[in-house]
Image (cartoon, rainbow, N blue to C red; front, top):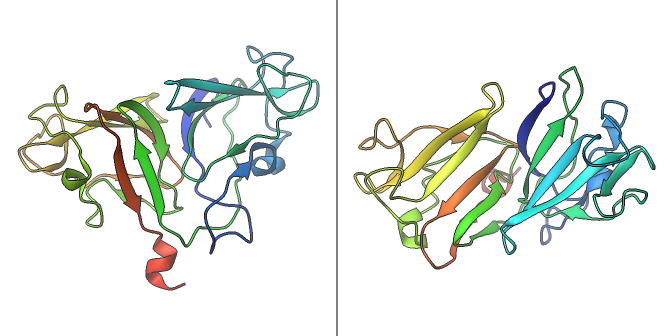
Length: 226
């Protein structure tokens, strides 16, 4: 996590013991238990490290911060109580490091062996690569056109995927190109991109239609048989 900067992360795990069943949430205060000494604590969300989880139904954020009242993550509305909320499997979230030094987060859990179904509402959805391996944008297992992705000749017309570049502190944008009926970079709209969504990283999806899009992501563990 860069010093005084943002990372757009993902929850690629489920609670240990649940990987072969329906994916379940992972407690926020359990996921980061090994890194409490690295986080900057504060009495308000304006002072402590932050996590912002996108709520697609509200088209807004739920905010948590590392509270000095309890030395754990707390909801902005209840700063003196450790939150009992969980990340759903597949949730993407912003992490803001307020410290002067960059540091690494250690996250552990079990990889789901189940398919993960993702619903992309009209407008923006903050989702993630739910597996600890890179996910190609043009994965052969996902038929975006059939799922309902809106194609266009430019990024201003087709659905968008925006991936946060931690080093640049800015986005890389791809769009669903009608030239190739696949994801492409705006600078090369007639060429399908070979880029991937990195493991453990969140991304924005802009659905330009008025209907939900549902995609199914297959677990690499289930496919390999490991």
